[in-house]
Each structure stands twice: as structure tokens, then as C-alpha cells.
Amino acid sequence: MPRVSVLIPAWNRESLLGAAIESVLKQTCRDWEIVVVDDGSTDRTAELVRRYACVRYIYQPHSGISAARNRALKESCGELIAWLDSDDLYEPSKLERQTAYLDAHPECEIVFCLMRAYSELSREHLTVRQKWMLDPEKEPYRTCLAGACIRRQLYERLGGYDMRYPYLEDSEWLARARLDGVDLGHCLEEALYLRHVHDGQITFSHEMVNKKQMLSMYADVIRRKKKDPQ
Amino acid sequence: MYRLNEEKMFYDMADGQAVVINFVTGMYYGTTMLGSMVLDRLVRGNAPEKISAAVKALPGCPENFDQELDCFIRKLQETEILIPGKTVPGGDEPMDAKTVEEGFALTLDEFAEVQDLILADPIHDVDVEQGWPVFREEG
Image (cartoon, rainbow over all chains, first blue to last red; front, side):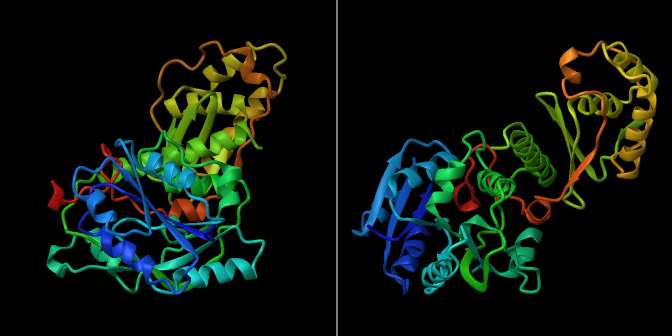
């Protein structure tokens, strides 16, 4: 049984998924499985994944990111979970460094790493937010599920992703973890996860609407924890 | 009378429990069931004396409830949850007896447990309909 399950939920990502998979194939740690959950892609995602014999490919009708993540958890078997967004990359030593950290810190249930954003776009094509993401001077964002390596037992205790959230599912899960007393402070101070900043114009809800929804999500998690402290 | 300080505060009420999040500091606030009901009416702009009348109609209400309410409002102002606002009629609608299952205390508790998550959480670059990022090259 592989030690690490690298889980890649994907939707219409034929152009970038190959690079993501190959960044796992280049890992110095070799004890992994890769599971791609295709959430009803209509492009050639399936064809692309099938080129990699070592990758488990699972298709499901389009159900959203939470459903894709939960399916990936269910279909995988490693004691450690590492997520990879289908358009991002791992640095070659990511899994080795994180598994070594977890071995050295048995009390740690989740270890993060720093992220480095990169883009092929020229600066004039970037949005304000994308420029901020690419700014090397900005305070690094440590508590991001995408770069984390997580003991599966934590999912067994907390449950998977909340299907009511078509997005914000990762933030909701982390909030639940924090309120359950999970230490989210373990972080390797190295940029081991590479976040791809895409084309400058995206379909996106207005910032304030998204912020309200985010805060509403936190309020809901807080309320549920108060109602059921166990 | 009062209104929510929307410059800093997010307010959410569901299942009889109010949650206030200060999205500038990342702190959040909770209160009792009665506190939630009272806060809900204060945020609406209802006058404290009307709210007090509704609570006093509940069996077992202590005689010093007005002092409890004044102290609660003071804390809400000190934490900048409430700021002055227009008075809105009402606030004395009957309250369910369940509202005082936890008693008549009006507490305001402050928590920092998810402070760093609230402050650091980046806006998710996703399409709200799809729940996945959708980029121009696909549009």
C-alpha cells in the first residue's frame, strides 16, 4: 500500500494536468499513488490522464469540488493525503520533506508548506489580485490546504468536505479542524508548492460577494461547533 | 437607536444563535440564546426598552434585567459591534420561552480561534456557479 495518496481533483484541465502529474512523477519520495478524480470534464482530460499508466483515473458526473475531493479520499488508500490542484506543481522534494516532518513529529496531524506563485503572463495582462499573488515581497500564505500533507486519520475524525459548499470547501474544512483543536501551525518554511497564475481575465464573483459568503461559512462552522462540541 | 457596525462586523443569525465576526481583526463573538435574540433586535434598530418589555414578559425574568441589558449594550458598543443608528419600530414581539432555556444572562464572549484563518483567507478564484476556476481561454 502506498504511503502517500496524491489526490488531484480535475475539471476541464487538459492543458495543464499533465505537468501537474509529472511533478509528482519527479518526486524524490517514491512511495505514493496518484488519484485523479475527473469531475465530469468535457475536454480531453480523460485522454490525457490515461497516458499515465501509474495514475488511477476516476470519472464522475459533474458534481463540484467538494464531491470530487470526497471521492478522491474514498478511492485512495495511503495513510497520508497530499492534494494537488490540477493546474499547479510540486517541487521535487515536497513529499519527501513533508513525510520526513510527519515522521519526526508524531503529534503533527497536518503539515503545510510555503507556496510560490508563477506565471507565463506578462505583467500588463495581470489583474491587481494576480500581481499581488506574484509579489515576492508579500507575506507568504501558510495555511493552505493545497500544499498540505495530512494524516488520513484526521479526515476520519473530522469527516470530509461539506457538500453544501460548491467552493470555500477547503477553508471550511480547515476552520472545522482548528475549532476541533487541530494544530495548524506546522509549516515547512520552504516553497515546495508552485501555484500557477493564469490568464489575466477570469470569470469571478465580485470580491465583496465572495467575502460575505466566506464569512457566512465561518459563522456556520462556529455555530455548528457550539451546537455540537464533540 | 443602534445598528451593526458594517465597516468592521459581519453578523449572522441562524437556529437561534447569533455569530458576529470582526473581519478586520479576525475575532468572533458569541452569546447566549437570549443574547442572540436581544442582539438580533438591537441590530435591527429596535429600542432597548421595547426589547426589555418582551423579555420581562417571560416567566422567571429577574428584576434587574434592565441593568443586565444596559451592561450588554455597553459591551456591544465597546467592542464596536453596535454603533448609533436609526430607531426602528417594534422589538417587543413575544419571545419563545425556549429563548431563556440557558437563563437570562446576556454574555458576550470573544474568541480568537480562527483569527488567522479569517484574516489570511484569500478570495477564492472560482466561478460561483461551477465551483471551479473558469478561465478566459475556456469561456
